[in-house]
Length: 314
Image (cartoon, rainbow, N blue to C red):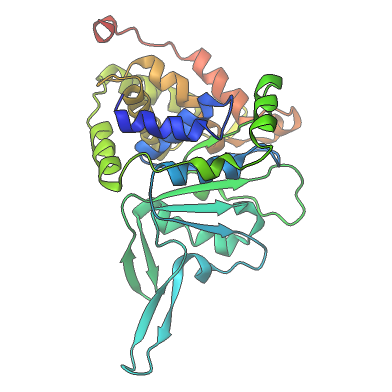
């Protein structure tokens, strides 16, 4: 594993205790590259994790605390008339950054949520007919609270599909929670995080991840997983081609973090539930039975045979 990547993980783990799997998956998403949706109950450290990664990656960061009165222009920016020149000037919104911290994204209106769509897919934003490229790299790290529906707007399927993974942290175990309480007696560990890599180093790693090798049989495995969701009797809508591509990118990032220049079938299987679950549209029977997208994603993994590629493991 790249030394700077190890340092990033070390810095984030100063703050996020006992959640190594989630921390590594957020980093995988950044290297894939892709956007992350952290969905969990209040108070388990979603926003803290996002802030920790923002500091450790050493990138320019802006934060939006979404509320019901947030406007699309708060995200994308707007044009203002320059009195001296008589021309309209672009005033950048929060989106003009490397890492956008979209806090409680489901607290704002559908119109404001949709302002992120073009940026998340194409790395650009259009205001008053003029297109502006976003800085590279660009990630959205969003949080949302699934408990209670008052004042929230569900993210549409088209927007959920643009998040490479949806992750949950869950409550810490007893030992980790005791460590957190002890470490925060006098200071906030976030204050101790230092940038662990430069923007140029991160872009170089992203380029290396892109070159990680995937065997054709693994492409076939990913295709079989996606097709299995499309015929599942409890689903109204299965995984899109964008979802299959996302799984390949996450599998490459996982292989890279494990020090390999090639993807194994286990890489794809390990991240498939996080890539697939939020992309599945449940049918009425599944909702009545209280079956979740994660349940079906795990079932699909069991139904599709894992290919054996012994030559890759040598």
